Each structure stands twice: as C-alpha cells, then as structure tokens.
Image 1 (tube, chains in turn purple, blue):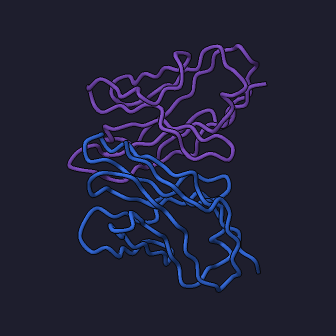
Image 2 (cartoon, each protein chain N blue to C red):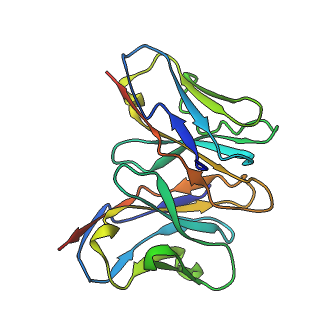
Length: 115
Length: 114
C-alpha cells in the first residue's frame, strides 16, 4: 500500500515496561510527525522529523519518551517505564516536506494500553 | 503560540439537516487551516484546507469551510448530512515557520439521527 503504516495496531503492556511503536511513512516523504490521541482529547503533538535536521521534540511529555528516525524513513517511538496515563492511540503522519505546507497523511495508529 | 478551539464536544443532527461545526484559532498571522475527519476505527482523512485566496473552500464529501479573519474562525459546513458522516471532526492550524506542525482542536463528535 501507499499509505503510512504503523505497527503494531494494538499493544497491551504492563506498567513499568518499555514499548516501541513503529511508523513507516509514505515513500519519499521527508517530514514525519508523531501525535498522541487520548480518550476524549484532541491530537497532541509529540515530535517532528524533517530530513537530516534536528528533530523538534517540543511536544514530548517527559524524558521517558524518545523517538528516532533511521535513514530518513522508518521511525520508532519508544516509551520507557510505561505509566497508565500513557494509554492512548499514537498516530504517525508524514508529508513531502518541501515547498510550503502540504497536508499530513496519517496512519491508522497504535492503540497502547498500559495495565 | 497558536491554538485551536472547537467549542462543541458533541453534536447530534438529523439526517438531511444542515451542519455547522465551529472552529476558532489563535495565531498572529494568516494561518494554514485544515479540517480532518476520523471515522470509527479509521485514520484521519483530510476534508479540506485553506492556505490563501478565496475564503470559502470546498472539500470532499460535500463539505465546505469559510475562513473569517475578523472572527478568527474556520467553520465547517454541509448543507445535508448523511448517516455516513457520523464521525469525529478535527480542526487544525499550522504555522508558517514551524515545519508544517499541525496544532489540533479537541474534536467534535458528530452523531446523525435517522
């Protein structure tokens, strides 16, 4: 498929465990974003990658959250020592990232449940 | 910093009735504005966007939105709602100098009565 792919689609983990969420952006898209959608909340910006530039980490809620993007393509969002308040849907989005503002293309998200 | 407010958390309309979902933004310059829809179990889909020019923009599925600078609003409208329009709708704003990062409102959940 040509869309943004996220895995796993669902993840249940115990409090205190680490989790990794994966995002495969659309081929050729240089800009990649992570958002968090909690129950009854809007989409909360977490982090943004653009090409080889330093990422914009301004939305990460704590130092337990980190993300990397290898080779300018696949991205992994890692949450260490998960807490129950981390339960949410984590959405990844990408866009071409050149020539002004183009809309974001979203994946279907990873639903994380921390028990 | 820019922000987006969607005052209505939940709206119910009858099928065939008209719809208006409210969105107000806070941003110092002319923003880039978007409406996305999220159907149950689906990802977010772009309905329409405003960058510049004509303040009335047409989108997919019969939706339109009007940018009103004086009111800092970008309300979404549809003349006749279909049952399949039941979903959550998000308004978003992007700043010109922040790499296309979108700031979203909290969403409005739309229910459609038969």
